[in-house]
Image (cartoon, rainbow, N blue to C red):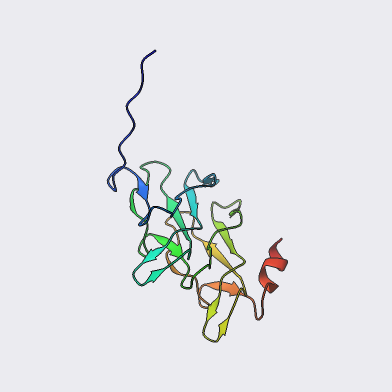
Length: 150
C-alpha cells in the first residue's frame, strides 16, 4: 500500500488562521446557490489587537478558490473576545447571498455582552470588516437577536 505525502499548507494555496487554535473551517463550509462558498472559523483569534475567539466568516470564490491568512480585509470578524462570529450555521438565500448569525456578539459601545448580531453577506464578493451596528441587525439586550433567528 502506497502512502501519500502530507499536503503542505501555505497562505498561497490554503485559507489559514493566525494561531494554532483558530480551527479554520472546523465545521462544513457552506456552498451558496451561485456556486461560491463561505467558511466559518468561529474560534479565529485576531492577532492585532490580540483578541481570542472573535470568529471569522470568509467568502470564497467557487471558481478560483480563496487563499491566504484570515484577516479583517478578507473576512467578517468580531471585535471582542468570545464574539464567535459565525458560530451558528450560515443561512443561504435563494439569490446567492447569505446571512451570518452571531448570537454571542458583544456590542462594544455601549458595552453590552451577548446581544447578538445577524449580518447580511454578499454572495458575489463577500462581506468584510467588523460586525457592527452599521452592517448588522443587533439586539438591544442579551440574547434577543439569537432568539429571533432560531
